[in-house]
Image (cartoon, rainbow, N blue to C red; front, side, top):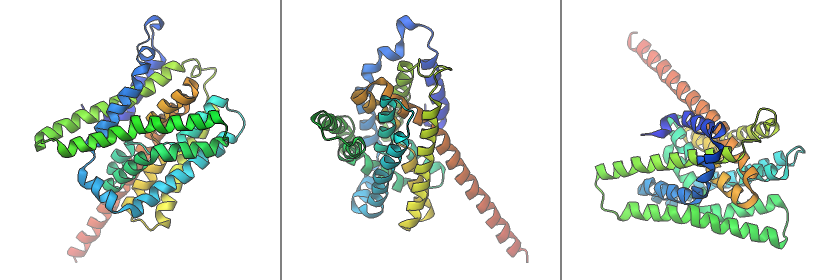
Length: 328
């Protein structure tokens, strides 16, 4: 079953079930919270397996435009998140969660939406791959700058995040990619394995977000819903799209790569952010990444559909022009 076709709908259904779970004595989501890290590690291994070896090799050989895109993401998103988090009104935990949203790498959903948007999917995969591989270095560095502290506790926290990212994210991706290259699978078997991997990856992200929602039911009640936080997440998302498109123009990417970079920078890996935030700062800090998932999935889908519609309209206009010229 291809969850990514209706990922936003499944996200609403899973999160709605977590928010309105009727049996507090048997909370399925909270009881399975400890499975988040191993499930995510399996997900990253699946993603590593699904990455086409040719695209990985092309990324490693042509690091110029990919590196420029990843550098733009890691330089601008943490700064924007820190600026928005510095505005008074947030609790310390949600402030840290908001900052972490800006520090994590791009999401795999951006690869799917890039394809839907008529963007360069290979370039998108390259951006996600390189940003993910760099995350054990880049995320603690960006987070450390944002926190602005060098006391022993902060240093220990950053080292913990670096090790956690390597073990949970980078190592499984490498293992999955090696398995993809080594295992003697025929075309049909590889397609079946990829379908299973996609299901596991999407289901895991949905489950992680649902667990965060379940652990923050009181914060999401009607009276205490964090509207101010939602506004800041919205502007971070829009700022990411704006920076991606402008940066793509500045480094002279073609329109297809520009679309890929726009979606990559605007859509952060909120599942990873939620897990890391909960580990480092507590359950409340995981709420901003969870809420960001809704915003970036919705806005990314709208943006991708809009670009796709513009392409179809342009193609239809070109056909009319050619037909008019042929009848003269």
